[in-house]
Amino acid sequence: MHHRMKQVRTILHMTQKEFAKHLGITQNAYSMIENNVRPLSDKYIKLVSRTFNINESWIYTGEGDMFTASPYETELITIFQQLDYNKQLQLLHIAKELLEKQNASSQQ
Image 1: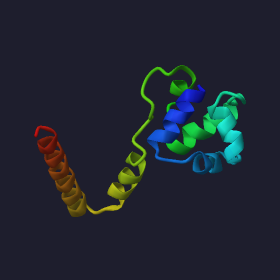
Image 2: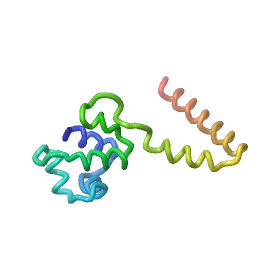
Image 3: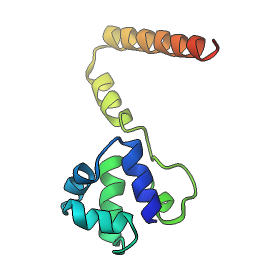
Image 4: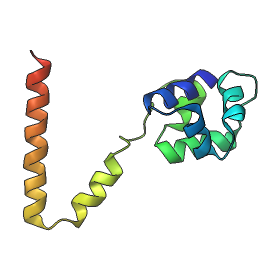
């Protein structure tokens, strides 16, 4: 499990110190977890899962998707729901344009 914690931290582009702060522990304590010197408690697994939308069973087993949802998905849905109908249509149009550009650039 310790290597999956490092994988999460790396994907989130966080230092050990930043990640440890979210867990409420010191960088040194977190380093010991990441290096498999100190065990990873269920408390911290639940905290990482809730804080970063990480699939808890992925942390335990490595099976399934790492993220339960995109880290930005919840925020985007919240914003979308607050927009009026016309603004929702505009946002949808912008998102489709971005996807088309992404697909076009990946084909080059």
